[in-house]
Amino acid sequence: MKIIEISRPLMAGMPTWPGDTPFHYVVNWPKAESGSVNVGKVTMSIHTGTHVDAPFHFDDGGRKIAELPLDLYIGEARVVELTGRSSIGPEDFAQVDLDGVERLLLKTLSWSDPNQFPSTICHLRADLPAFLAQKGIRLIGVDVPSVDPLDSKELAAHHGLHQHDIHILEGLLLDHVEPGDYELIALPLLLMEADGSPVRAILRRS
Ligand SMILES: Nc1ccccc1C(=O)C[C@H](N)C(=O)O
Ligand SMILES: [Zn+2]
Ligand SMILES: [Zn+2]
Image (cartoon, rainbow, N blue to C red):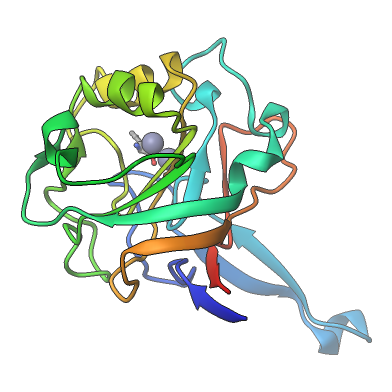
C-alpha cells in the first residue's frame, strides 16, 4: 500500500501565524551531559503547519482536542481540486460528486510558497458549512493555514462549520496529490487541555 505524505515539515524558520510562537527544536539535554541520551524540547504554536482545530480554539465553551472522536481523523476521504478561486462556496461544487463523502480535503493550491506565510488564501464562504453538512461531511481539510480569510476576526467559516458539526484540519500539503479517494490518517495528540493539535497526516491508496 502506497503512503502519501501530506504533512508540512516542522522545522526552524517554517512559517507561523503572524505574531504567534515560532517553531523551535533543541537538544535540551545532550548525551554528553545526560550520560546516555539526547533529549529534545519543542516550542511551537499548536496552529503551526498541519494541525487540527478543536472548537475551544474559537469558542471558550467548545470541546478540547481530547474530547473529539478519533474516527473523524481516520477513514475514507475524498480529495477535490478547486483552484484559481479567492473563496469557495456551494456553487463551486456544481460539478463535484460528494455522495457518501464524510472527509473532504480541498486542494486549492492558494498557498504558493511553502517557506512563507501566505498574504492571502482561498477561504470558505459562510454558506458552505450548511451545504457540506447536508451532504454528510464531518471533516474538512484545507491546504492553507485557515478556513477563514487571514484577517478575519468573526471567523464565520470556523463557527459555521462548528455549528454544523464539521471538524477542521488545516495546513495540509496537497500539491502532489491527485484528486480522488484515499484513506486519511491524521491523528491529533492526546493533549488534554488543548485548543488543537499538530498531526502527522498521510493518505493511503489501496
Ligand atoms: N494562531 C493564531 C493567532 C492569532 C490569530 C489566529 C490564529 C490562528 O491560528 C487561526 C487559524 N485559523 C488557525 O486555526 O490555525
Ligand atoms: Zn488552527
Ligand atoms: Zn483554524
